[in-house]
Image (cartoon, one colour):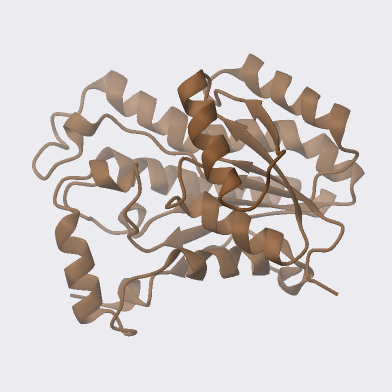
Length: 261
């Protein structure tokens, strides 16, 4: 029996086949999980997400438009989900955004107020908003697992990560508060702090090319993280193997976070 047989996951945030959400979806599906998806509004975004889902071997996905920055969109998306499914076991939040202009060494102090607010809204508050919408469906299902994607730049300074680091710190803290509040309903909330992986989001960070060389040379495993590494951890967090784990940030970065230099 697969670890996730009979479970249903809603994946929010697949951008392409290199995104962590894609690797998580692949791993969950390999363990018997049924998947549902959202895409950003617009035909181009829908096409891109459909193409990525097709690469998973899913020809007719459950797929709905969702702008997580709009509460009405979230309400509508979860209403449609509830019409199609009678349970929700897993919610994957893989959303982040910050203005590229301010993601460069030496630019943090100049971050405009609106750019700061936007980064925290999209990258952190959306976890709270999605958890609020998922809560009643998960509770009826007997509980569930919510997971979000973070990065070491939320814990220590990564030059150029700037306001995104602040947003990731807020995301991890939000996960802990959600874990406490939703725990009585058997809903677990955790963050995966994945190592640097070249994605649409990470490519916006100035100086990111140096990170891969540094990690490969210095991380305890002497390599960079792969998408599968995070996907396997997501299976653990989604399954009963992690039944006593909530409010945690789990590093999946080949150990680079353990180094002092």
